[in-house]
Image (cartoon, rainbow, N blue to C red; front, side, top):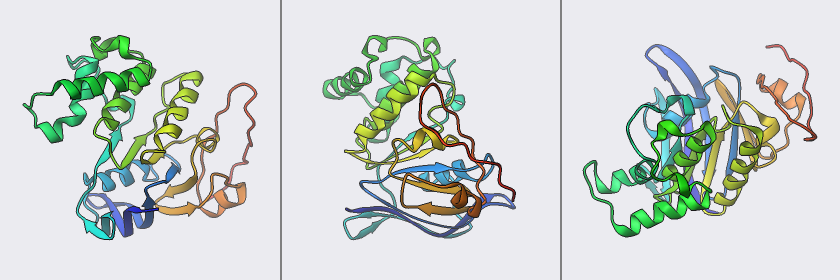
Length: 251
């Protein structure tokens, strides 16, 4: 098991507001980590720190290849769907290919093999028939699949997803997380979600982020643990899915 990422004693935020305080986390190449926590607790901020979009006020973020420390690594990122501009005039196939932009440059041309790879990924997710559609014509679930293809086309070592089950139906959510479970055989995954009831079926470990980070080395987390982490979360279930209802715990 190889180390990909180590976050050590990181505090970060925006201007004078500290959102994350003294964060520590190690990510290995076989990890599938679910990040849970309340709105405003710092989940998305943590992803931005890892992506290098926010520079920590203190602490370090290091990437690894073998025993060598690197300044960066290959990361695939799926943002929240409400951050995607559906009005932008671009086709599905070109969205997926844009995941190779860092290799080809903004004005680079894509090879036949790269286009074939993009089509293979679309086929793998069951949306090859949409390749010539404009993204403005897609449903929320279809759009999520397209941007997942974009995130993994460069074969990243780490895939990060921010609330991927928002605005999608239950069947899509099940299929989508099943796909992530298969992808975890090829890459480490960090997924942010408000819904521990869903992600606990698929992730291997859970971290609660509410200003601080509390790592739980299992996909089972109890009411008492959530209370001790000061981490209120929401659980949503549908149909005959086994679930646990947690009582409200006070700060």
